[in-house]
Length: 263
Image 1 (cartoon, rainbow, N blue to C red):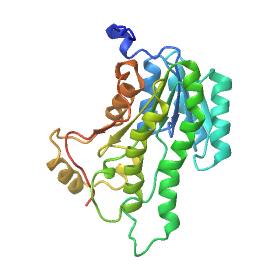
Image 2: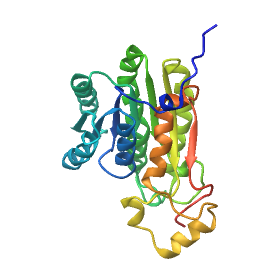
Image 3: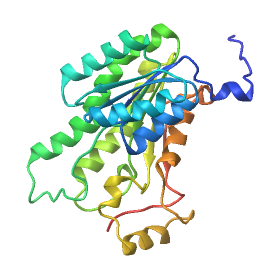
């Protein structure tokens, strides 16, 4: 029988010497997560379309006393994904943690009578296929190192039911179930989980948020405020760290205990 080793409290969130990739890490939830991982001792690579902003975020990472690397990466391009992982391994030594945070889509604008199937296909390419491919590229390095944790950013839309959301919400629901299945493929060395944010104050939400919408959202939210990027980063850190070493294939929703929708 395998002997369980009790970890001291300060070991449970210790990521010293681990190497993390955060896609879409230049801003918002991705940047907050990158900083949390760095505070726990991880070296962090930020892969983002916006290289200048990624470099600026890396300055904040390196100020915490760990190594950082900014890589320009379009997650829809196979060559970019391969080159990014190769660069991280060459510069930082390995990959232990993958935060599949980059994604997107047309949620809220997907009227099936008005859009083309290519727009729905793009939702799945952004939110499902790119992350699956990065798992395939990173897991061998994780298994070789003896430590691996993958975390996807999913969405409350994956369980909510709303109009004009079929492609985006469907792709995020696919992420939840994909994660549950990949846990069986990647274990025991590599864990894989997902974090589903509720309404979180990011630039994208602020662009559509009105006082009326916020009031309606909070009427269905026991913790009477909207989320902050740090709230989501805390759940990401939990999954990335040894404290969750017996947790895999799970999706946790960080939503103030409620449901927030735009309509």
